[in-house]
Amino acid sequence: MQLNYPKQWMNDYDGWESWTEDLSKGHGYVALKIVQANTTEAQILKYLAQYPQDHPGSNHVMKLLDHFVLETTNGSYDGLALEIVGLNAFRKLENSRYGKFSRDRARRASIQAAMGLAYMHQLKISLTFELADLHVGNICFTALDVNNLSEAQIMSHLDPPYLLTVKRRDGKALLSSVPRYIVRPSPFTQTGDSIKIIDLGQAFFFDRKPGRIITPDNIKAPELLFSPTSLSWDYRIDLWALGCLFYEFFVGKPAFNNLSPKSLIWEMTNTIGELPQCWQSQFNTKELLNPNGTPKEIYEGLRSLEENLIADYDFLGGDMTHEELKLLTALLRELLVLDPKKRKSASEMKYDPDLPCDFCAKVVFGVDRVIELL
Image (cartoon, rainbow, N blue to C red):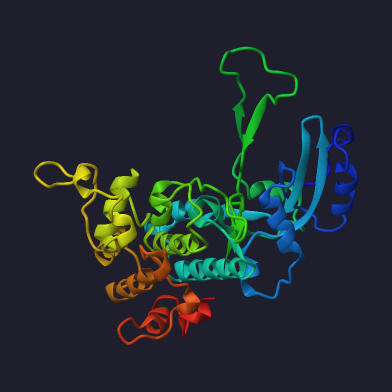
């Protein structure tokens, strides 16, 4: 945003005018987000802003540059001045050759996402990557520096604005306080190679877990499928989601495809392995089978994780060999573990002759040891 809004508009909100005048002397252009006051997202962003930025992962989580409070007739709101970012990973994947990242870009994005997660976990904050924080729609690439560009130059790097008319469902006239149209977000089309985890709307402190996580089923950790309203799950849901993110970065499509919870669990067990004993009584496979034994809701063949990854990758082609894909599978098997207690963070992946994760890391990610990822 360029800080030159009309004073009559700014004066409607206490604190806005003084904030814009102050910020315009410092950070220049920012992305502005208005949220209800004292949300967990605002609290976490303010907390991160006060914390030392010496962890390398801090460079891959959205930074709060400044904030202010809006006092309105509808209550208090936090104005969050954030870094400007470019296209999200979903749009980048769409625009990429073969619909997937190149090996080198997937390496960089995966390492940076893992570093961002490690930084947040060090601060005892879970990202709940599932929906708000670690899926491809909320991983953005950095934008070019706009502070030295003219307004015309900035506009040339944006998609054309797209207006949507606001209408009431009952056809009646809009209230005077309701905008006549909204503008669809227009991302910067030219971006850098570094990524940022944005939108911490569902992040939470380890000791303040929400009662429920709302997220698309096909990227949910299995413990969320079996205990959606329970507090029995913890930060390890992030590790599952990190594995799903790696898969999508390298392959260009989700690791799991079935949308109903029961068929998704069936797919997980066939792809990864047997359910932990504590969940087996809650899942009856007979409900998913036809009389002839074929699955009712499975739309894709049931294959192992390695078979799925290689088949999905080969469908449109790419620049990774099958040997590299097999090594990537070995790393994913450390994260996509059905039993959350056995799920390993990258820093726990030590060399094992039966599962040479360090060798996998060197080939897949271009680093000498897995621990270097974090």
